[in-house]
Image (tube, rainbow, N blue to C red):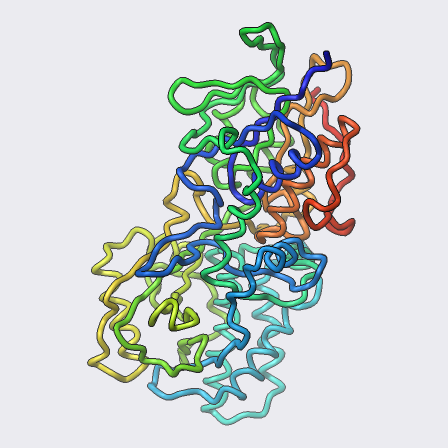
Length: 497
């Protein structure tokens, strides 16, 4: 009787769910997911705020075309039916208490964005260095009054702060300019589906057997390149220890834990140790932080048609783009409005990146609320502005099962290192590659890192790698296919020497 391959997927984030679902669709019957927490979804998290559920993690679909599997699946499952059709207005408040002309702000902001739109090849320069130089060239050629120049500096500084939110970094001088050619490559705009993204993981796992999804089972050790026997004499090369003295033997393990967890646990999680090229790749890539602060108000102090609020510091130069914790409130500059109001109430989301995000995660709640309220009173010129009636903040950096939000590439690092992160590992005892360890997650997708579709596609990629290994084919109706431009390196196994 032919042996049925036993596959363990570590992590029930979107990469793990993508892998497990694709494996089942390809005909693999013995697939188990081990999830450390009590919820599926990973960095697609949810929390009940009042009467409504909110997305604590990912809320953007990067690319609204049929080549994006997250967009396709969200349409298929009806998730997009609940997303407001109208985007709303951008409101900009100056520290001096005045409202900034939106047309003027959009023109300046658009010009600032264009400075980093090109796909540069230089990995030895930073986005920060490049951005500052280009801003200086741009503003030198603009004819404007003194007041307009102050506003321009503040708006261009906002572009830099928004780049910190995009990357999760603390300082744009640490982010590789060359990495920008891969960042959200080939996407065609973003779609904010706040309050709806968390439905995607459960929809994808709807057909997955409940008994094969084990929650609250953190993995302690993955022993590979071995020979372990079950009680009935079956032999497997990998043993996974998890939970309270539990274990499972497997032929293949798909590791989908976050890069932050890999950085923290790589030296102790695997036995034998991962090869040097894999450890170096884990060390090279950076894992950023993004904290969302949900502020619930009794009454809105913004107009009904406003969807985004930006706070503009007119005295701020774009040359200073690091997220200094001592000046953290200056980096709480962007708030999105949760819509529709009928569902969520009067809720703002404040966004903080890098060290500022880490700081706001760990501050006392009363201190954070007091600082934010004082901040907003100053910009609205309303000293009586009531504080929020409640608050919730995400804590992805503090969470031991994530240790951050998403990946970025530091200066001096080429995105090719992500292909190394994605390489599977085979045992030394095998006569041919046996794909004992496979790796998925947004950090393994050089063209779509830091995105939900990157994570999903990476899981599907590893499932397809195993299907190819066994001569199986995934059902074409299962998911949107892994498009050739996002496959990365050919699906070739790696044998440990």
